[in-house]
Length: 473
Image (tube, rainbow, N blue to C red; front, side, top):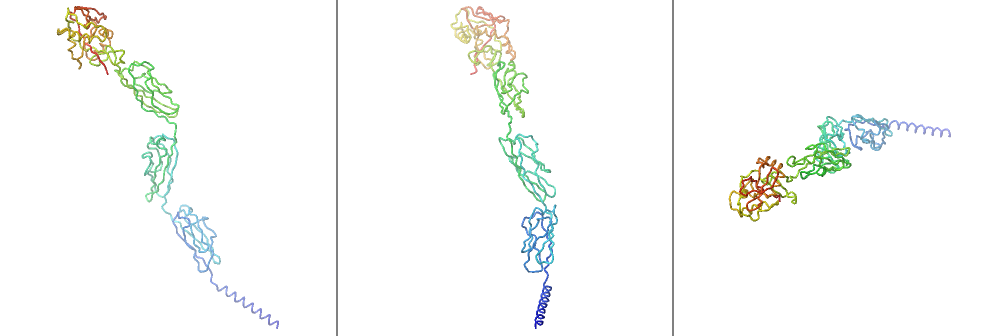
């Protein structure tokens, strides 16, 4: 009985083993399918590549056991979906093919993944920033715009602030200074430009930013100055308008030569040769001045206009100036006619002319008026000048003895002025009537050879030369 029981147990075990063996051999095998995919280069992280397929609907657990390059893709362990894990390696120029091997629990085989990366038309450009000192030179290079892409690249500036400040090499992207005047820190601390790169298929833009450093700069402006003619040496003319630190001033050119000196530290311009400051010769004078701080040098002109000061010998107010009232601040005096009037007698001999005996400067007009009032004789010296209309003036009179003496004292300058203006000079060999009466029969005359003032009979025929008073106010 025991033997029979043992036999039955052994038979049962054998049947179970045979049954189990037959059941395992008959189960279907799980196989994974290889995956081939194509994707454009430069995808985004997380982009779906594809899904590993199998011959079963059973739930599988997927994993990547190797890939080239490493870290390129990732897999959903539950679904087998492959996605981009590192978009940077999906670059056609570097990795045209990406591969991986995927396994699944219970699968008889591994799936080979092959991803073909497609080359696309790429174009990229980088923003550009630099810092330079203000006041560059036209054409100075600022830097080069960095860009990459397929095909031939061309660069252009599509906008900039301020306009016209920069230019760009269309072939290389080199950015340079176009208008240096705009690179002024006090006006534009930052300059910008929008740069476009084009490869005929697509375009990209970037921003160029130029920051300016404020430097110790030198400026100098044309300075207009005025000074009266006939100054003294070392008189101050004016100071050049300039700005900067530790400036040095130097005259590099002047017209007329030798006219000016300059204070090298202050830019103050002074008279070096007073004889050149003559309105009639040099009404406008010039000095070109260099201003430097040791690093930067600029130049500017000092334009000096001379004020015309009334001088003995000047032809003005209808005649030639022979006397200037010292109390008038150069604004009042006497001129003598440039033409000689006809010879004539003083007139009215034997008659005392009341009010005609003035001798001083300023008495000539009063004397002449008195003579014309009291002496009706036509053609006398006083009558000739009283009726004279010369150079648009009709207020001429006969000089008093002291007025005539001033003509003598300045005869050289007076005759030079008369000659320069086409007149008839006052002869030093002749005698000329004054308007000063000595007595009923005598009147004063002046000998121009020696300035002697003597009396002669009123009926004598002497030279006549008219004078008049002038003012500029």
